[in-house]
Amino acid sequence: MDTKITLFHGSEKIIETPTFDMGRENNDSGSVFYCTESEELANEWAVSSLRDGFSNRYTLDTEYLNILNLNSPNYTILNWIAVLVEHRLFTIRTPVARRSKRYLIDNFGINVNAYDLVKGYRADDSYFDYAEIFLNNGISVEQLARAMRLGKLGEQIVLKSKFTFFVYSV
Image: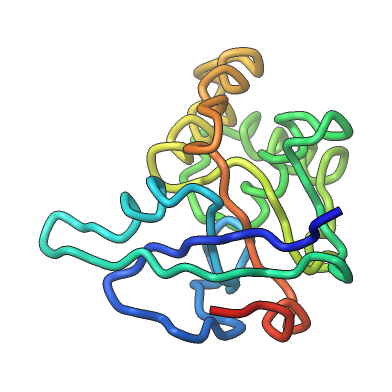
């Protein structure tokens, strides 16, 4: 079985060599390196309203990596949202929403720091809006799950550990 995957990272600059801790601490999975298997999605991430960007391409050997796939049948949308709400900053409007956040983290949270690579729904601002609305009781879990299902365009891959950066190539 081939353990190599092709990853893309959209950026406003060329990143020849990904390095650990390139991301912001309050992003979906903390200060990590975000990628996708979709070149189309990387192209979208690369372009802002003010400038063009680049879709950087890498090959990663996953053979010795500890991988968490939140899109596998072993996990639900509640696992994904628990990981998300633990790391992202957002407005919680009510005491019920605060208790809901704590409940999600305590009952569905996953220690993503135990993994080298995390695969799951992308959580850019448009996706995060759905999560915030869910937590504030604006949509059901079924509606949230439907909103997240956009195939490969809805998936991101997070390079989480320092070890991951030793097994990729440009």
